[in-house]
Length: 351
Image 1 (cartoon, rainbow, N blue to C red):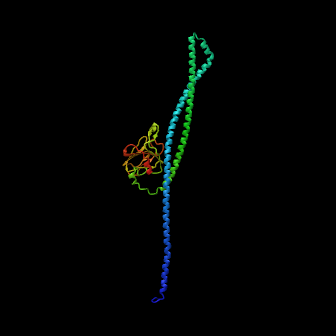
Image 2: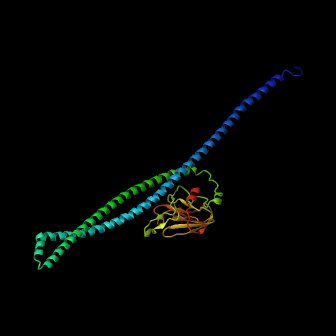
């Protein structure tokens, strides 16, 4: 071609070959980067799905634990009533046995006297009457003796019948108590198992970023759950609690019991001021006063931060002080610093 020297053609072929080689090297690298990006996105989607699945599982476990905790509270109340009835029956049986023994002794004595005297003595007693009037009186006396003997025999039979009834009732109560204790032991075992599973899932989700809770406090009294960790909430506000005088006496339950392992942190559910409120029934206790009234946490093992607190600050730790039967946080809410109100449904929104 005009104007092209013989050496230009090889140089152009070399440049073209170099460009082609560069293009061949570039295409696989871009494809590999795209594949890595797709793989990362897929892994992210799968991770989110696992988190959602674990969160749903925790909600199911929490529901089960709340149900078990409520059943435990009901069983404990049932056991208390049965034991009280058992004690009364035992004392009643002792009294009946003493009464029956006394009546039986009287009847045995009358039987011995009748045997010793025999029927002939009654006839002799009548024949020795000094007059008809005396005979009538003696007949009346013998009739009265027979009537009293018959009445005494009926009393012995009645005492025996009442004693048998009480013994049967005591046996029935004892059987019910055994079944209730077995049910209680089974529920405690199931609750421990559920809590262990909940702790495991909680540990897996611990690294997950908490949902922003500031907005919650605008529409709900509690911004966070009062117990930070695996727990079980009993829906027991307003139930009649029967306790011995040494354990505070009978009373209406003014809050919800949140069962949790000993030492689990208890936190302020809203901003406010935390003060100690120790007492005989509640043991170590703390109140938090804030915008929505105050909350009362009892049976603590030890105190946390006091004074000015923010939502989520640790104000104490779960324990079993006071009249507690086991480790739990007795949680009360007093809106407007007035009478206690049932906090259960509000707890369900954050726990």
